[in-house]
Image (cartoon, rainbow, N blue to C red; front, side):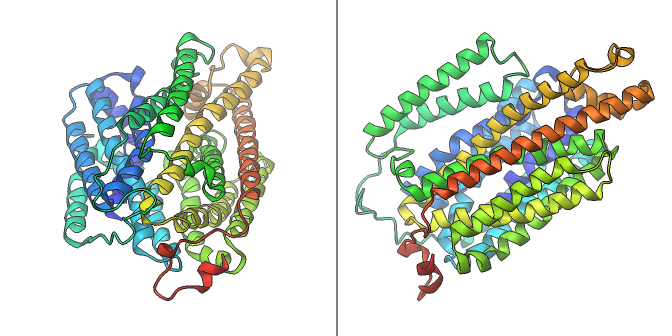
Length: 504
């Protein structure tokens, strides 16, 4: 949990300190790469670390991830300009990819299927706590100390996590010898060409998705070159992985219906999650007139109910099955997303907060059973790869969602601004960020312009939530092709456990 906290806290703590960082180092035009570079490094390394953990064991990969992350944190604290800080954030991401995937895999190794919802729910509380505490802690450190402490606070937490792992985690590799691939005496082979191809493909694709429509237009030469390059790298990856003795992303990840359908469903979940995490805070501040802290609380209600529902999900899937539990969760989540556009304008803060509370509960019933189902369907020698594949698909889905819904939001808002009454059209800002900033200082606008902009943001966020509901339907459709009963590998069962495993 301490290892997971490093990655979870780092993804939220830096956001509130951006003004201080830019004021000290400059580089306002590229500061978004503080987030994009980290996300890119985490995403493209997930499959590689998954395969390495299956090859060499979880402990060395986790220890290496913590060390790399702490080295990146220390270097970030000493950054001398924005370029160096971005480079060191990428290094942090290289460690963060090992933390995210390996911790989830270790939880599946240590706990039998019956106990896994409890420990996975505890891991979920780490993300929930970080989503609330991270921005507040980052703001306090930036305001009363120095922004460099945002990275230095990782050192004691990481050192304690590293000591505990080295001192107390003894790995049971009873499933390490995989008769289909190798024995313990066989020297492991690392698919370095496949790893480099995945790095290149993921890096080009994510750069195109993150920067397209922001740094350059979607149909410009940079976007087309990046997307074309990622397509060529994807084709090269498939060819390399087919010929590799130990591929980073083996073909069975997509040939097994259990894993492939869950990959698609969680990719749709990543798509869906962009609506509440990216656009809800804008809605809360621009439409409801809340401050940043109150807007964060509206979002945090989702992170409160998610781990609780995840912990209780075993009562549902042990009785009705994993697929049925996940279908109930995503079906209810889609209804919640469709309910959001029906909220009255301007409404009260408790209304979206209540919907986010319900959304967190439904997604807790959806995501965790699927992760447990995939992890339980494979043995030790395949579990790291299987876990990394579903986390990778969720991360890619989130990147696609940010680009797609960003385009939806900009198109909707541009249409609303173009249709503005002639008397106020000249003084209106041109994009969503500019509109949000203008509404924060509404004294510079007329009352009619302020009300029109609030309505425009309300309509924009409604369209994004409709898009998120479509993503929910895509996840539901993917699950309809999943097997009714998820297979359970012998490694996933506890001593004498048969009932719940065989039932599903």
